[in-house]
Amino acid sequence: MDLQISGEYVPIRDKPFACPICNKGYMSKDSVRRHQRMECGKEPRMRCPHCPHITRYKSNLVSHIINRHPESEYANS
Image (cartoon, rainbow, N blue to C red):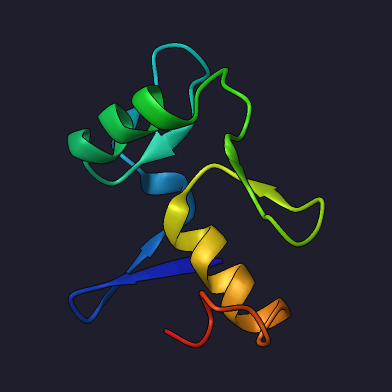
């Protein structure tokens, strides 16, 4: 599997920045910092008010609500 960046394909295995805790690879230092702050060793915090779905990011929760609960007020705003 490859990743497209600015018109170039980069093999997934060629991610130059790794988390020192879990060794997960990333394309930028900022991505590693975000991973350490939001993901690494942490449980998801964002809970859907309509079902048991849980995610780490608010943007993923908003997408979930819009797609899975179109009748909700969040999806209609």
